[in-house]
Amino acid sequence: MRLLLSLLTGLSILAVACAADPVPTSQSDIGGRGDQGGTPNPQSVTGAASEFPTWLRTEWSTNFTKASVPWKELIRGQQKDGIPAISEPKFLSVDRVGFLKDMEPVVVFELDGDARAYPLQILVWHEIVNDVVAGRSVLITFCPLCNTAIAFDRTVAGKALEFGVSGYLRNSDLVMFDRGTESWWQQITGNAIVGDFTGTNLELLASSIVAWADFKAAFPNGKVLSRETGHRRDYGYNPYVGYDDVQSSPFLFHGRKDGRLVAMERVVAVELAGEVVAYPFSRLESRPVILDTVGGVPIVVFFKRGTLSPLDLATITDSREIGSAAVFKPLIDGRPLTFRAEGSSFVDNETGSRWDIFGRATAGPLKGKALEPVVSGNHFWFAWAAFKPETRVWSP
Image 1: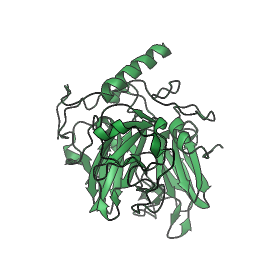
Image 2: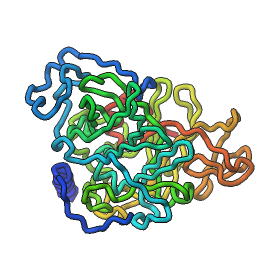
Image 3: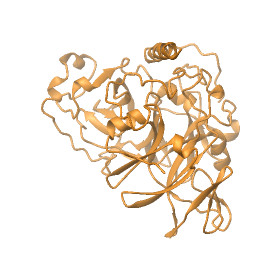
Image 4: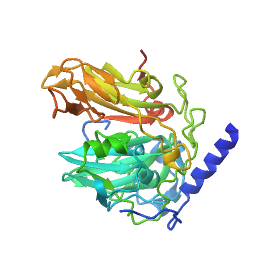
């Protein structure tokens, strides 16, 4: 049965990878890790760059004489732009959204009071959204094969870049490209690995995957990415059926698996001051609040139930619950706080104030205050460990 599921999953993913417009739909539309992001530091790596075949130049204007990874590590999944990025996103107000159920997962990005939700039922088909939030050019990304949702500032050397899906994967992770130089960028790290920008890091921005109900409760005036994407897709349907079964094997992955956790375990990962730590969802389920120190910086991890997997059953709304995780600095006005989980909220032991999954105090003496978010990512363990093998895995 497991083998049959694996074969069906592989066929489903290949069908998605090769899909081109138009694709029939059964549903109608309703509506880096370096801190020097934007500073080019191109470098040529002897051996790596020389391996890139000359036939690539018939499709790409990329400067293949500059690369930081060997050609053999890249796998072609589909043609360039075979998965279409969204570059002119349209949004709906929360009260006009009728296509999301309460537990459906959305990527949330908020900047200067402009809060936006990007439903995974849309991102699973497009993987990249080029957006402008509160005047800042940002990049919202999701790699289904790695379960990795990451937000970036897409301004490099003072210029906002537009990104697309290259069609290539490395360690099963999405390789993006910018349309200016057609340099190739690794999504999970935000680092340019091929082309003129090789060695440049995009600045990572804090984002999270939460349930739609949590977003609309916290941000009733927020904006939601519309299904009016300019492409016909079966939004709400999961083309990666059964992929995130913990007994499954990652697709198009030829790297070494780190046996400290099962490959498809979800983790929330944090990197601060050179230290990297992963917090497994399976452990967060029994410990929904974790106080820890990473790179000398105190952090708190919140875990909340009520979010569905986008990669389980054919219909996302029928899929199993996996929960949500977010990371913050546990300080308010320089005062350290400790927390406990209480029902669907979090309570600080110092004032008894109640907090939500976004790190905002919703009741009590600190109501209106907010914890500073820490950049983190929800990933499948196999993918994160492939890029960050030095990761410490948290355990009680």
